[in-house]
Image (cartoon, rainbow, N blue to C red; front, side, top):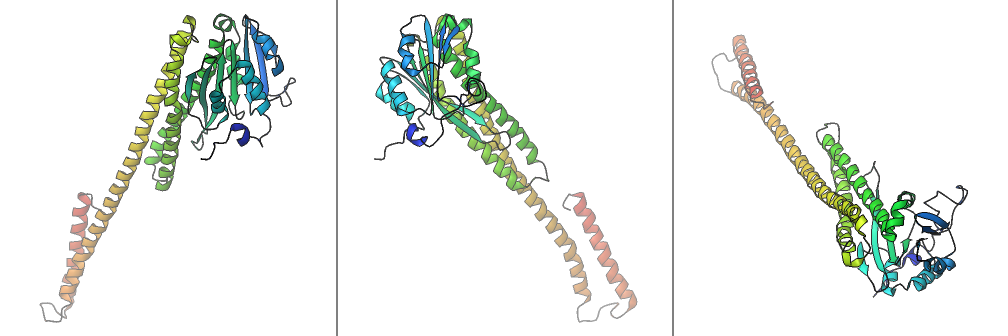
Length: 355
C-alpha cells in the first residue's frame, strides 16, 4: 500500500515561507523565517520570534501564553516541538500529511484541530483551500501550515488585547477559527454575486450558451469544495466547544457560538446556491427547448405559406385544358390566387404568433 506523502516531502522543494503576519522580516522588507513564535503575559507581547530551543522556558511560566507557527516545517523543527509538547505520533502524522479532512481530536497531552482556509478568485469563481493544523497543549498553540497561502496577519491582529489575558489559549484558537470561517462567508458572498451574474447571462441573447454552461459548472465545482470544507468543520467545532474539553471558557462561549452560527449560515447558503445553479441549468435547457420549438414553428409556418402557392402553380401547370388556359386573363387569376393565399396565411400565422 502506497504511503501518503507528508507535507515535508511534498513541499520539500518549496522555499521557506515568508512571514505573513508582518509582511516580511523585522524591517518589513525582507523574508522572515518559516518559524514564528510569540509569547504573551497579561495580554501583552513579551517576546517574539524567539528560537524554538527556548520554547520550554516560556512554557514553564504559568502566566505566559505561547504561540508557535511552523510554515513548511523541517523534520527537526517538528521533532523538537513534538518532544516539547509530548505530541501524539498520529496527530503529528495528520498534521504533516496533505489532504486530511477537517476534524478535532483529543489526546491525553493535547488537542488537535485540522481545518482549511479558502480563497476564491472573483473573476473565474475558482475556490482554492489552504490546510492549517493546530496543536493545543495547555497554554501553548502550535499552528502547522504547508505554505503561506493563509494570511496570519488578520489572525494576529485579533489576538492582542485584554481578551487574551482573560481567556488564554482559547482566545487564540477562537481568533484562528473565526478568521477561517469569515473566509467561508466571503467565499459564499462571492459565489452568490456570481450566481446573480449567471442569471443575467441566462437571459442575455448576446451570451453564448456554452459560456452559461461553463460558468455554471465552475460555480458548482466551487460550491462542492466549499461545502466539503464547511460541513466537517461544523462537527469539529461542536466537539471543540464541549465543556469537558476545557478550552472554551464562560466568557468565550458567545464568541464560539457566533462562529458556529456563521458555519451553519454558510452551509445553508451553499445549499441554496447549489439549488439556484441547478435551476439555472434547468432553465437554460428549457429556454433552449423553447427556442427550438419557436424555430420549428416558424419553419413550419413558412413551409405552409410556400406550399399553398406551390399547389396553385401545380394546378395551373397541369397538361389538360382548363378555363383561361393560354389566355392572359387566366395568368392574372393564377397570380391573384398566389398573392391572396400567401397573404391570408401570413396574416393568420402572424396573429397566432407562428411567424
